[in-house]
Image (cartoon, rainbow, N blue to C red; front, side, top):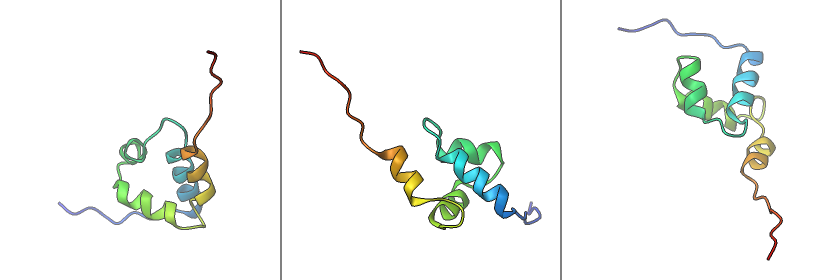
Length: 69
């Protein structure tokens, strides 16, 4: 069963990419929320107009925690 091709506005793409870059949220979760393929979100994330590389790096950056010995 083939469905109609959906059109996503630039604003929607930016919003979806931002949601997928939030801490603790996976791209797959966001894709399910919008009933779309996760590969499409990954494609948008690589596009500098929609997903920023800086945002990806920030969420994956190492963090140091204070340790008492």
